[in-house]
Image (cartoon, rainbow, N blue to C red; front, side, top):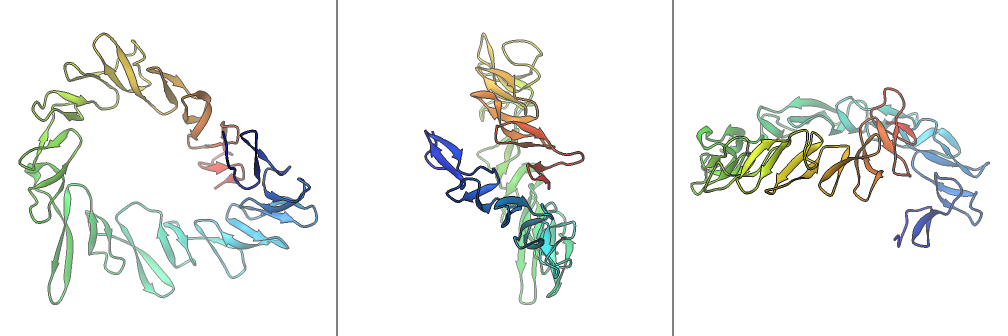
Length: 321
């Protein structure tokens, strides 16, 4: 039961009901058809007193109501240029202030933005295996990939900061900088033992008993865990709800039950039930009500996944973005 609603909606008998006659209206006058404020990408047309889409959306988030071709704020990946329109940032930027000055990256870890002038930044690759490095000196690591530790040496003339490997024999996922053979955490399929090194479980366990590495306590996706014997077996195509759409299954003696389903299915009393078409996550209480959609579709107000326009990976009711 609803107790409060988004702007443009009122609580009526425990549900949110639109206060305005137009769905893109977030605020309206006493007359429900007279809009006074709109959702992002739309503006109030003073003549019709209704919401109209900004002509340059989705690049333009908010446009000038008196001249909609002029933008006030731009979407991520665009900047407001001197003509009050939105121009695209460099391809590696998620945000920028100009065509040459990037303020945030959309590329994977291992890169930095180096300011070369007050109005220009360039993309630089960090030293391998750094996950992040200094914007002013990409050779100086700030964080490392798993299996490495950050080593910093400070002298009177310079600072050196590199990622060095943990001792291979210890099989650490992370280790102490002062003692690289001392593990702080282990990879899946191993556990931290009393000697602060990693002991490997027997395949295909993802975790196991600390007193018996052959006794599995969890299994990888696509396997069934038999709790009594501590074994992992590949999920068969038949039997008690554990089939190809079951990502993880547990055998409790006489029966097997699914505990996790693959995307597009929901768990219902140990059985994976398909969600509505296009839905990657749906409500356990209603398989036709979607919570999250696959790429190439978007979630509408009815909880259904609607296909995006052609060649569009991500979209909304307002179009491709």
